[in-house]
Length: 72
Image (cartoon, rainbow, N blue to C red):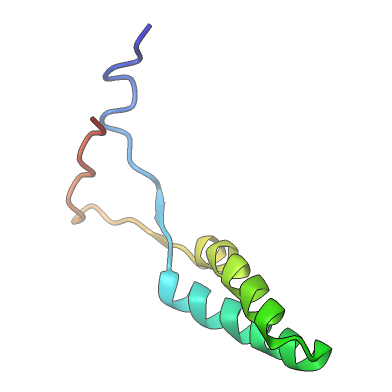
């Protein structure tokens, strides 16, 4: 039951959009930091939100993308 080959050809349906995620996440974090007078905490929260926004604004994969190499 090693699971070898069970997910080797499976690809995610969407690609995270990191540029939009980081831009929106850090922007919201800086705004929160300024509003709360704690810019460091605001930036930290914004960085954490960046991953969520990157996945929310993900773009679909098209057939021209190279296949993802199998995990070792």
